[in-house]
Amino acid sequence: QAPERDVIVRYDINDYKEKTDLSATKLFTLMYATLRSYRDINIIEASRRGLVRVIESSAEMFKEQFLDNFANGVLKQVSSLLAGGRDVAFSLEDAAAVTHDKKEMTLVAGTGRFAGNVGGSAWDFFPARVAAAIEEHRERGRGEYGFWVGGSYVGMVVGNSGRASILYLVGEGKPAEIDTHLIQIFVRNVLIAVENLYLRNALIDTQREVVYRLAQAVETRSKETGNHVKRVAELSKLLGREMGMNEYDAETFRLASPLHDIGKIGIPDAILNKPGKLTNDEFTVMKSHAELGYDILKHSDRELLQVAASLAYEHHEKWDGSGYPQGLKGEQISLVGRITALADVYDALVSRRCYKEPWPEDDVHALLRDEKGKHFQPELIDAFFRSLPAIREIYTRYRDDADEGGAA
Ligand SMILES: [Fe+2]
Ligand SMILES: [Fe+2]
Image (cartoon, helix red, strand yellow):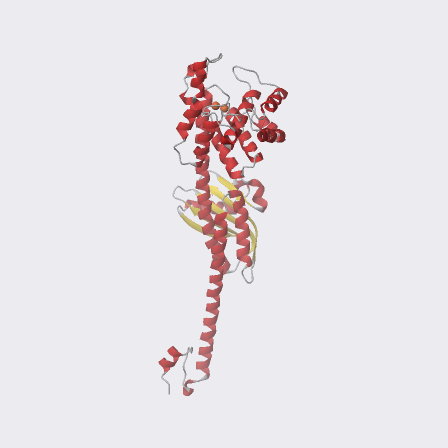
């Protein structure tokens, strides 16, 4: 007779009965226990597959860099998360991501019924019951919360300051327990990403604001109008895109553009604001603003400031080599330098300055055609004339007598 322990360990056998042990009760217990184990193994396997889906979905989410794509990503991922389940009793309809800074609850991304309301107050779009539940959880302070209100799931992360990131999933029915768990884990991951995106956007906004305020300080001193830098920035991005720059580079260009005349902070008032014509010596001092600006910006490793440094340095260069300070020629001048030169000159011509009236559009166009291949790159002048409708739109939006419109 084989010893019981030896058999169980060495062979794939979970129980050992001698013939005399095999009563109906024992067999029943054995079968029942085995079936339960089988059921548990299945649950574990389903959870495992679910977690794999959560990890895959989260990884997909983190690829989304911009909040407007983000909510669509969330909706897609949650749907596929649930669709992987066996008998799903929950169908997701809409999703909304919201930040709550204690005063305002702002919709940062949304799909379906929320899609058109990004930037608006979530108080206006969320049912009162949901809003109240969110408030109640937020007041509990720092922590992660997930709860159902009717058929909708709310996941939220509340930070130290009382600021909260919230994901609101509107659906029909109630998911199985295991799916609820998966949704909770997924939402927690997503909210971390929402939090990061929020901080990232806050940083970008701050950077933009600092650059713009700095540029405006210079423009104010040189008595140019506040909208000059805005128009040159918009025009630069537009022409950048038309000349083949990708959206990211063109946007960086737009943000850096206001710094093109930053070197003017080193030019004495008497020269900067002299009403009459500059003497040769004065003009030499004035011209030094290009290199001054470059010196201020060149040591930064930041992409934005590097772009700003090269356009500060090169925005007075001319395509035929007759510009300053380096006398660069053709493609020796960076694309951002070539474009800023055109945008800056164009805006100066069509605007009113203390020393001149705005030029009529026809005269400006004639001058640009005349300077094609001399002051300006020929392809750039072509790109300019192709973009005329969009350029006119910029000038309607940022008229000098208009209110401060849009961001810099
Ligand atoms: Fe300049
Ligand atoms: Fe300028």
